[in-house]
Amino acid sequence: MATMEQFLIDNAAHYNSLVAAYKPRPDKKGPASTDTGSGNPDMIVSTRIRPMLEEETTQGFPPGVFPRKGANIVDLHELRKAVRGTPSLNSFNFTVDHVFSSESSTSEIYDSLVEPLVPWAWGGGVGTLFAYGQTGSGKTYTVSGLERHVAETLMSGSLEGERKINVCVIELAGQTAFDLLNSRKQISILEDSFGTSQMAGALEHVVTSLDTFLELIDAAASLRRTAATQKNDTSSRSHAICRIRIENPSVPSAEDGMLYLVDLAGSEAARDRSAHDTVRMKEAREINTSLSVLKDCIRGRAMVDADIQATGKSTKKAAYVPFRQSTLTKTLKHVFDPASARSCKTVVVACVNPCLADVGASKNTLRYAEMLRVVVPKAKALEYNPDVPATWNNEQLRAWIDTNSGTPPISSSLLAPTESGPQLIRLPIPTFLSRCLQTPDVSPEQAQAFQTKFWKTHVDAQQSQRPAPIKDSDLGLDPEVVRQAKLNCSADPEDANAAVPFMQRIRPGMVVQYKPAQYFLGNNWQGKNYAMILCPASAVGETVCDLMGKRVEVNDEKGSDRGGRYLAAIITPSLLPGSYLVNVWKQIVVNADEIEAEVLMEYDEATRYYYMTL
Ligand SMILES: Nc1ncnc2c1ncn2[C@@H]1O[C@H](COP(=O)(O)OP(=O)(O)OP(=O)(O)O)[C@@H](O)[C@H]1O
Image (cartoon, rainbow, N blue to C red; front, side):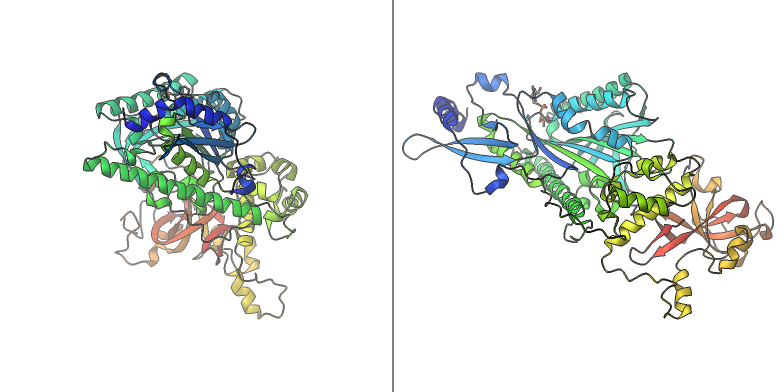
């Protein structure tokens, strides 16, 4: 036994008496250490102190980590050798949002922190749980318990509506990822052309019963354990990510709800003294980097959110979220990318081993947890501004919905029964859309266009230096300038043309919704497709090909060009919700009979994206 450990055991009785006499001092950290402050409700940092294991108590180690009664504070003590005289106590305290003691059960953690993530993701939001801590601190114990509770809630039938639940579990070791539900097959983490990270090749399993769900969780856990044993290793050298994707078939165009349950690699790997060979050292460095980038990402995102909550806009350009710097955070891009603007709720459980022999590692874990916590400055009541949704109370919001939601008006009491402007901004988009669709006769297109309009109002309000919009009432302006402003929309600038059926006034720049030819996207393509008309297909040279390399020939099986074949640029969703990108050089041919509708899009100079308009 190491001499330090022997010293702790020999002095256990003395140490226990010092701890019993310990009185927390009013300390230099000021009120923040006794007052938990106002944590960010969407980013909760908690700690769970696991019970002492039998082997630790039998060896004679006392505990070194204690929850403070009646406060969200953890006290941690070290026993310091004295040069002369008796050893003394060196004490620290850490403040988090919730402290779970060694008597707390996983159910308690679930009920108070994790259960709310489930209906949130069911409604289309992103909910993430991270378990952080040193090897043997209870991460796997905690995450696997929570996974079972999540599965039970998802399958209980207590949540409203029908959903399709897809599960995959992967393990990340350094830059490499393995599918834990497919014999640990190696997979790659790729970013697609929309900037979304895909776990390429990971099998998703559709679950329809609790039993299957639990079997999958157990299978993944046992594969992780077996692989770890075979490598003569512990599971603590890799991150395990269980991803539950929740599809809402009634709002197919909206993004899916996501739940991520992440069992992180052991935080002390880099300090592992046995890690001498180069592979281990490299592995340890990678884990360290990924955990440190994770911290920056969680903090960065929490700062952006806190800023929006306090001021109604994101002003801190400095809150940089470096999610591209590690495979772990790239995989969890949804959770961190401030540009994605998806509504996220995150819970961190910092797992702590209380044994006095391990307080050094526990101190690091608790420090890390404390650093993740971003206290939201007390929000000043924001002064009402009709252009800034973040300043609207429920009544002002409802008045805006009543007058801006088109025909038929979307019922404001169904869309925002209690919400304020900021709360509606944070509502997951699928929930927003489902609520709109509760008003009789509202079509999915109207709901989508209204959601986009609301977002655009919010995004515009955030652009602090945007140029003043040009209004027709600015009569001093040259009428030509007014006409130019109208040219920022794909609508025909001649008002009189609006009455002409759109197929008779197809022109370059018109945006259409179309059904793509099967060769183009394959059979299983779903969702809406938009393109901007460039010119008749007959107007191009003979060598011109579409983006799939197929010749844009004047005549195809559909016959002559007079029936209408157009070269068009594809339009794809972009980073901000409801925003689109016109891919000028990604061209396709659209046949007249594939065109379903005209869609109006507006170009926004501030964000340089296109938005659909009512
Ligand atoms: N709250 C708890 N109650 C009872 N036993 C616990 C608790 N937490 C952890 N344990 C036990 O402690 C041991 C270590 O826990 P666990 O394997 O979950 O740690 P870990 O942090 O995931 O470690 P590693 O990083 O090595 O995978 C296990 O035997 C586990 O059963």
